[in-house]
Length: 400
Image (cartoon, rainbow, N blue to C red; front, side, top):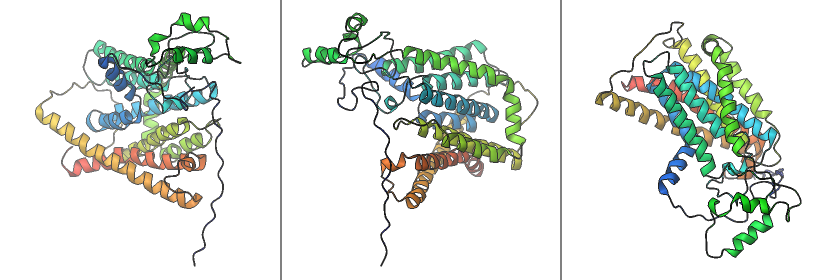
């Protein structure tokens, strides 16, 4: 007879103070009418440029099809910038704007604090690090690259305002009861950002609230972009030294795994659950796996590091080149997605056996002792497969 294993009661995170955070997303889903589908889809797409779907496709694409050194620099900068941004959110604890007056088109990231905007930080870091890393290796107009980086980062920043994650409203306090009354007076209608003016908000200051609710999240976007720019300036002089160290140091694999794990396990304590710790683990895990892959390729394959600074020109794009690029990307992204799904199932299965929970138990998966190892194992495997296994498969299939 098999003895049934006891399931211990798990601790749960405190619920957020809904008076200050994401009100009233739990109680009521705000409706809205899309009047301009061009802007709607433009900014929804732009917002996706700061999500996992973009990172897991764009960064490997650069590695497989453009330049290994450029990809290495972008991944290192992205990891550092995003870690600082995510940790800053949970240290500063600045709330996101309330809904109403803003209309929120996203719910997942609404559970995070707002300052600084990590979408703005990531967009600035990725776009400008790409330009900086390629301007000395490829012959193209610097003004064109700079303009593209500005457009890219600006679109992502504006998308955060459009989707309601940040706002341009600057007021000292907002009266929730008055806003509810305003909504109830407008029966059978949908309220948008345009329906409540700054004058309306200022007239309702202090009426019915025990504490003020500051709406200052425009600074979240500006601050995020500026922080990212400052970090780029500080990191740029050390790019070559860091790159050389990561490729040649015998301690690189150990440091690349241990340091991110220590940072993830010592992430600032959360007042309640939000995706920031999990997202940080995802980013650091992917960076760790990729860094180990960079080191391994340099040790046992053709050395990727060179001290010479060459001026390469872009090759003439032909139909054969396009087919080759698409084939590499298709094969590579299939391997990456399969790795992600496989390692996620394996990691959750092992942790579920260790801590007595089912894979579908969302509450258990949010605990520190589960969330950090399962996400780190999953995405470090993704980073490793993208930099080691996929190039080997490309060579085997004659796609190099």
